[in-house]
Image: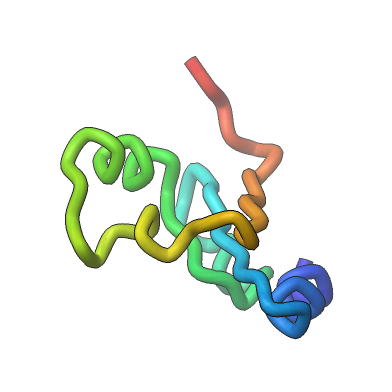
Amino acid sequence: MRALTRAREDGGGNVIGLAPSATLGDQTGATTGTVAKLIHALDHPAPDSMLNRSGAGTLVMIDEACCWR
């Protein structure tokens, strides 16, 4: 996953990772957060939110261990 992050960033894009815990950043080298943090950012927009670092060139990685309910 680190190679994917590097390739995306070298191509001018960025990567945001979502996982049930904050360990995905160690594996990818990307900006990461928990699913709960994303939900909070959607409900309470803030200037420093991970959502403000996303755009048309953003790749979003979701850890497969994540359980949606």
